[in-house]
Amino acid sequence: MSCVLVFAGLDPSGGAGLLADAETVRAFGLRPLCVATALTVQTTARAVRFEAVSPSLVLESARALLAEEDVAAVKIGMIGSGAVGRAILAALEGARVPIVLDPVLAASSGAALLAPDGLPALLELLQGAIVTPNAPEAHALLGLPEAPRDADALEAAGRALLARGARAAVLKGGHLEGEAIDVVVSRRGDGIEVLRLGGARLAGTKRGTGCRFASALACGLLLGRSVAEAARGAKEHVRSYLKLP
Ligand code: PLP
Image (tube, rainbow, N blue to C red):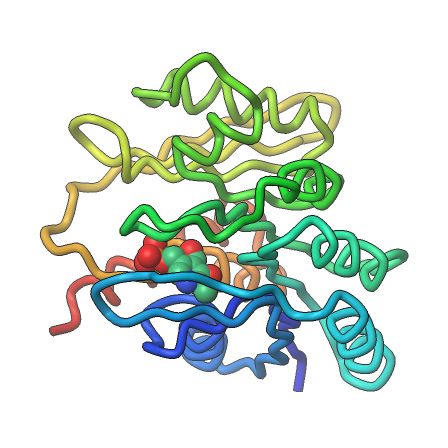
């Protein structure tokens, strides 16, 4: 069975991180392979702190899985530290599968999930990847003067992420004022295609929506869908998750 190789932090409460990713990949009928990048102290209500896993352990684990399992897509979530980010980069050297990068910086509660030295590693992991930032993450990745506030600003950020080397950018609009419009910016031939995905904002504040979105996107790409189709599918998957009691 085709596998999605997931790099993410372990949130022991299961709301976000590796456990949420594994749940998502299984919901698509696929098999998750999970490499923990960090262990976090978290409950449903709050994130307290984390410790990054040893980079050599991450590298060894990923290399073993890539050599012996049928990895057909990769999802990278929380990397925790620059050293772990570089280990992931080394493990994925030469990988010829879609790579989805969710540039996790902090938990919704505000607690940091990336050490200050981690940003350059994220920018390296961005090369050739399909990146899924929300507005604050796009702000930090690109060093923008302010976080995008509307769909036009998200689109501009998406174009800038492609100029920085991303294969595509799926910008999540959950932090926008008003309607939560997601913007998909991808390469098409010599040009760039932009798609806006609307949808009324659903009530509730469940955790791990960003993790689930990126994993669902990786599953869609593994199943041969275009970035735009996979983004639609991922949005639908997250909407169904938000509607669960
Ligand atoms: N914990 C881990 C390990 C994560 O990977 C993520 C991903 O974004 C989060 C927490 C953040 O989840 P939330 O935004 O729901 O707090």
